[in-house]
Length: 84
Image 1 (cartoon, helix red, strand yellow):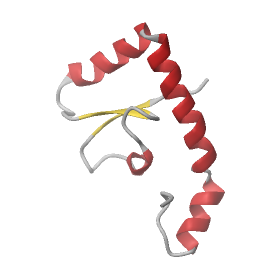
Image 2 (cartoon, one colour):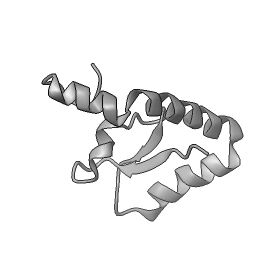
Image 3 (cartoon, one colour):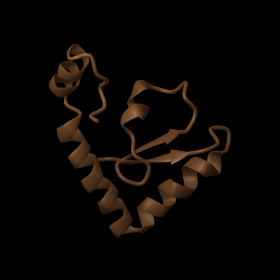
Image 4 (cartoon, helix red, strand yellow):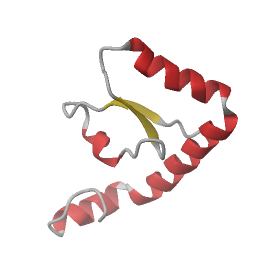
């Protein structure tokens, strides 16, 4: 099962935030101190199958792009882990 990520927009979180595309392969919340900022999108996805499936498709697409091998190749070529 593919599960979309839910992150805060603060830059001190895990490195995976660089790969998250809000609304495409996860949900980005603006205020990490607001529990409803996490809960509302999660509840929405639980109740809206079409929205959840859209994020699942985005996650499936991202997993093909962000493999360890592809990210290492981009790093060794002097780029970033994220494709251009």
